[in-house]
Length: 206
Image 1 (spheres, rainbow, N blue to C red):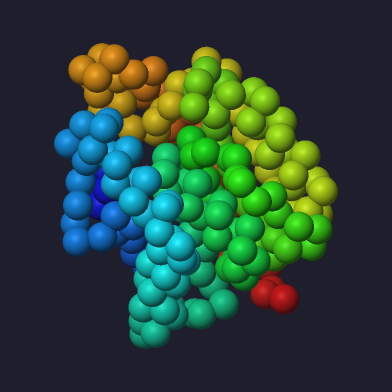
Image 2: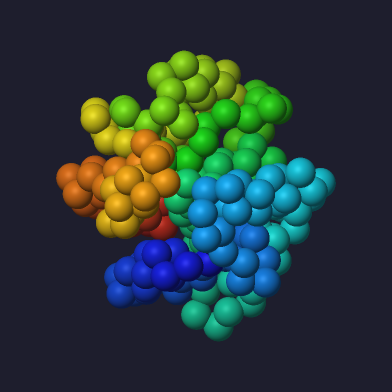
């Protein structure tokens, strides 16, 4: 949900000089207090036709109208559920400067068609993340190659799900889930994504 972690990541981007917008994908500030609640909120969004696109595009429209934003210089970054959301938007053919996904799901019920992905992608995943197993990673790579996408995928060996979240290890222990913070993966994925931003913002838009 739209919690302190998401806002802190937006603030970190703002500290680099970017205009950052943290999207509330669940709506109305709803937060999952435990995995069951979070799962129910995710399912509600995913099972509502057009909900992801409507909420994402509403935020995008606000950004495009912001006085400090160049409409052809917008990128998206998603964590966990948000990582799957931004990849879903890429599969719809959205045209942004770039899209990044951190420990997000890589699978899709409707694979990207050839030529459908218009936005450069960078994906970071954990090598010990059971929610994104090796076969899912391989399937995603094949999907992107077939689609002709411009993408980079980085796997951090030994990193678990939610490896960028400093609270992940404690949450994993509390709820009995395979979550874990990995300081090295967090640092390197952030450095990689911010370098990616510099690259795509320096590249002329199509």
